[in-house]
Image 1: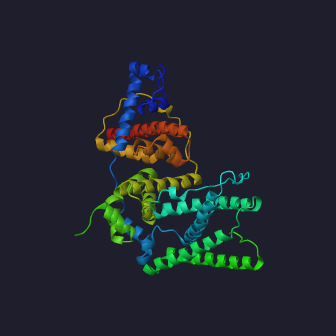
Image 2: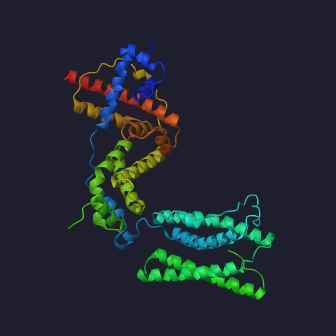
Image 3: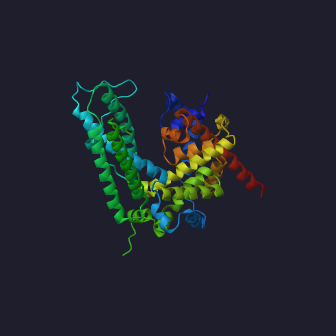
Length: 228
Length: 190
């Protein structure tokens, strides 16, 4: 008699036997025995006792943990991530403006998306509030990416369809950046050492100054603001 | 009154309190060490893995949202830490892949053995399995992972996971039988 292969017995043990296997099992005591051995071995594996770690393991872990005040920042993003997140937060302001602009266009006025640059519309009001800092940062990154796409379309529409010039939008963006600077300063007043808040303030101030500079040069040359 | 609930320990650990971290460690140290020791089959490596797993957990503790129990969360980190390092170890040396377990098919009659001997032999046999076999076997049969989950964690196809599992079972069975034979022979010669 040909007995079942290990693979088939293994499938049988997991409760998913191939057709015809049960018939063989009903008449083969050798395979019945094999299955029973496998079943018992699995039980023995599950019954293996829990093990105690070496007594010095905690002290080894403790040595590797940051000390004192540094532990307060455990799990928080590093400086590079913070900077990216801060930049992205500023971009989101632009994204909101881009949406305002896009909503102002009637459906027939909206330029057709150019191949490779799909028109992106994001309804910020419909976004689910992020559950944690990590979620919030991921959402900010996603929005920043969508903002880039929206911006490309915005520029194309402005150039190709005679859409409203960006100056009012730029002024609105400047106002939002001012608000962000003030909000960051107010938050920092409660915790001046917070690296995240410092990073946000730094980036917001830099963005605002760049915007002011662009507006000034645009006024001087009579050209539109270059969107960054 | 001292707050002793796990949620409160997690909250305090998140704010950087070392004593809370130590208490969380005490609560789950055995569970974490057991799983990494079973996967690694080596005491020294298991200690290193447990250390890495706990350090990873405390580094990421702000990502812990309380959706699962802390013990489940840290256990998952321990499994991932162990599998990552085992995969790195596998790259450094060839894993035994082609074991033909069919040779173990035979008379299922067993020599009588005490429960303690059985446990030791299964434990020893588990340690003797190649890393790939042992990982799949332990994750599936003890931790309850599906083949899809194992495939995702080990970077192998579902079919490969199933195949590895059946080979691992056959190999374990063969090792246990050999070990029992040694015990019986040794006992008879005394």
